[in-house]
Length: 261
Image (cartoon, rainbow, N blue to C red; front, top):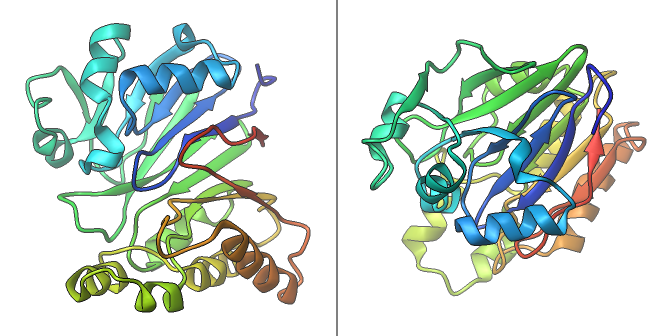
């Protein structure tokens, strides 16, 4: 358990097969998204040495299945309160009737001792958001699905000590893949996903004096490689004099290591 005014993060899963991030403070634990089945989510929590009884809520970024597949069943099994904005809650199949705690993008709210600020991101969903989570002086930014780095995204992530940011694809690998042209255009579009190069440039912009650790998230199995993503981001940051920032991997099939801020 982290000491007071500190946040600890473990990315339980990241990728098109499911996304789920565990966040805890000294007094509160919650999930950002629940894109695995309930059974697999509990399995990942156990693998990471985490107690699901500590969980107090699930916060949902958007309605795509790789972010919400386990929401309904986890709510039933663990009685977890659910948080989303109205458009997202209404768009999740089989979940519209659940007792959602609705937030408004841009307006902060609190779960226990963690303050959460949802912010709008450009992605092909009804009202997708990223999150900034704060506890005392600790700040974590999460943006795992966005087509372009907007000025709002830069403003919200700037000042965070830890960021979970997507590095979805390498552009050359995407172009040479066997994916349909329309899908390639969607991924490359303003409401698609960030490339390794764009993620690296965004991190260099927002790093300032505060950023210390970054999880690279939502890597494509077909159009990216973990070593390539890590190398691209580390090289860009080193060239900008930011080589002290730890760049950490996430995985589709197992939990990440823990990071604290």
